[in-house]
Amino acid sequence: MAEVVLLDELATRKELLDGLVPELRALRDTQGSRPRVRYLEGESGMRAALFETLEWDCPLRGILSMYDLMAVPGAAVMAEFIANRRERGTPLRVVRSPERETDQDWPSSTTDIRDVRFAPPGRIFTLTTFIGKEAVAIMSSRTENFVVMIESREYARAQANLFEVLWSVSTPAS
Image 1 (cartoon, rainbow, N blue to C red):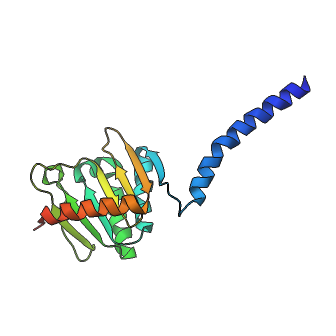
Image 2 (image 1 turned 90 degrees about the horizontal axis):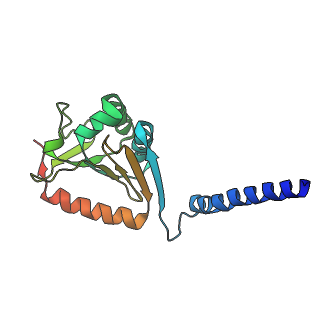
Image 3 (image 1 turned 120 degrees about the vertical axis):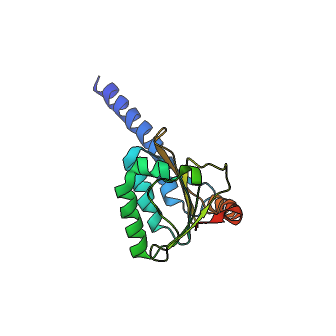
């Protein structure tokens, strides 16, 4: 009887450890061929992802939906993010959709180290995307309320190239 209980306990622990091994390998594997992908939920996940982008190497690029960012994570968090980005000296080049703007005015600013352009009319971005040299954060609107963090040099380079194409056809903010 005791042997059966011990064998069941051992099998349960083995299953748990078998599930953890791929996660531990992903944490250790920074040069490997597979990207590290994380899924975060809710306002706390969005806040965590937003501030994590400040740890990335510059330059920081973004496609921002101000309307959605004002809903989640909210104006106070965005003001804190901007202040932290400014303190760190992290420049941000950002493309926004005029259709998703708010009354809050965040123009290009040397003080805030921000260069803003507006996407061509009709190109509406409801997802917010931050692109670093080695990672990308994709933040949904409040409707779906999630963040996907992808750590991959190749994926980040591809997204940076797409951003540069969008940047080149976007209009500088006045």
